[in-house]
Image 1 (tube, rainbow, N blue to C red):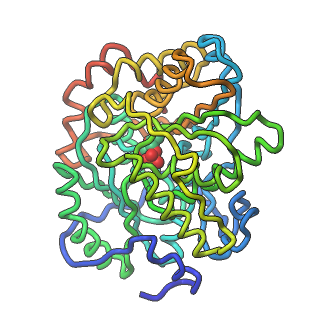
Image 2: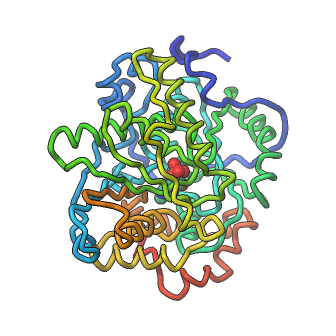
Length: 416
Ligand SMILES: Cc1ncc(COP(=O)(O)O)c(C=O)c1O
């Protein structure tokens, strides 16, 4: 394969391009919706590039995000908890069309895909994956074809919403019985798209959490450091954020460490320990730092065992995407006290961690909650599709009840 630029080769090993022969999947029509195309090409103004200009020449990026995201006081919640100041980083507003944490990663991941000549981006996630939907939307904004490989999860209203929105993007949706079946089919799907595109498709891992994706959160850490330096907020002693595939916490910790901001990043684990753990987190931090250092030797290599990120294991609830009484209570508290919509899978659990620590006197203010969920409403038409146009393995999310804690009281407070 011919690379678009010589610089691309420097980080080639950090992105996965396709590899082998196999299956077939139906091609779909182009979308009717007119996607706001992003015209920007690299370099974009990003704190990471301001601080390390060589990276702007070597790390392809396609601007998708509205940055910096605001920092606000979580005023109603401060009153409810009797803790102030309590800040919230509004990454839920990170993109004009779709916000949340994935957009920051996708700027780099899809920038790399385009620089490598890909025409399709294949990614994987649970049926209601925010990452899969964000990838589909961002792909359309950049003229790439999204292909989503989805595996089962507990049912929730948000799963239905995201599946309908996937349909609306005209992404190619492929359903699998489990993660292992997705692995077994990946090579075949890559071969299928290679043949259709006459180009290698780009394969983006779960949650976009490889060193290239994590670079988006290195930028976020440097961005927050700049906001602290500008006086937008006091330095928080702790920052609470959901820990799923770990790219968010890994990049954030690294960006803050490089900026010299002394704070503790608390990753509230929402995925099984085989996916998210202290060891794997340290490994991703080290890999991300060494990728950036390799591209720009002035990028430091902080030791993740010094002031390491903390992993809070208490709020997982035994299964990914299983709502818990604590996460549901946190979602309601954020909504009722501050009008902030959170979710039961990620942000509710992260806020539950903060609440528990405040109540136990373990966390002293100033504190920060990092809102990683999308709060941009999708167009109404996005949720009007017919689920029968999805693979039949996914119909059950529309035909079976949602999980009990999502059933009793809607916990998405009008998501989208
Ligand atoms: C809303 C939300 N918050 C947090 C996360 C976790 O981020 P990461 O996978 O980078 O750990 C995700 C991942 O899908 C998410 O969708």
